[in-house]
Image (cartoon, rainbow, N blue to C red; front, side, top):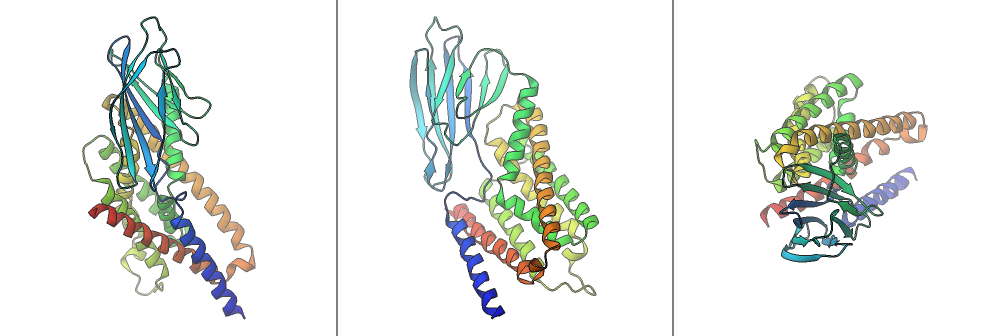
Length: 338
C-alpha cells in the first residue's frame, strides 16, 4: 500500500512539474521589464526607443501618448520572430512649442514595469520606473541619485527572486554541501564569481551571446541534480563532493553572465552603468539572502515533522529540478541553433 501511495505521489509531482514547465505564465527566465530609451534632439523633439519583452510568444503592448498635444511618428518597428527576446519600436515625439513641461503617457502598463532612461542635450541622464497608475513621465527636471539607487536595488532583487533557474541552483548548492560552514564557502564563491562576470560583461569587457549562457545555466542545475542523486561515498568522494566551492565558483561565472544580460537589456548609457551595476548587484545579493532565509526556515520546519522524513521527500525535489532543467536545456539549445 505504501509503495502504491509513493508511486501515486511521484506521478502527481511529475505531472505538476510538467504542467508548470509548459505553462506560458511560468518561465525560467527572471522577470524582464520593458525599457524606454529617450534622447532629446532639441527643445521640442525627442526620440523614443521602446524595447518590449516577448515571453512564450506573448508580445507586450505599450504605446506612447502626448497628453498635452503634439505628434508621434513611428520611425521603425521590429518584432521578435521566435517568440522570445524583445520587440523594438522607434518613435519621433514632437511637442507643441508652448509646452514648457513636456511629458509622456505610456498606455498598456498593466502587469509590467517600464524602465525609462532620458538623456538630455546637456548629457544629463534620468532613470525612472513606471507602472500601472504611475504611467506619466515628465521629461523636465532631474532625478535624485537616491531614486536611482532604490530603482536598481529593487530591480536586482526582483530579477533574482523571479529567476527560477538561478534560485534552483542556489537551492541545489544548499542541499549539496550538507553542513552550513561548507555551504557558506560555496555560496561566497558563487557570489564572488557572478559578481566578476556581471561587472565585466555589463562594462563590455567581455561579450558572450545570451542563448549559450542560458543553456549553460540550465546545464549547471542538471549537473547539481545528477551529483545529488549519486550515492555519497565518504571514503572515495567525487571531486565536486570534496571541493564544492570549485563547482560553485565555476558555475557562478556562468550565472553572472546571465545576470548581466538583464542589466544590458536596458541599454544603459556608459556614464550611468557604474552606479546601476553596483546597485543591481547589491539587489541580487539581497534577493539571494531573502530566498535562502525562506528556504532554511522551511527546511527547519520540515525537519521537525516526521511525515517529511520519508525518503520520497528527499528525492522528489531533485527529480523535479532535473526534469525542469532538462526541459530548459533542450529548449535553449534549440534556440541557439535556430
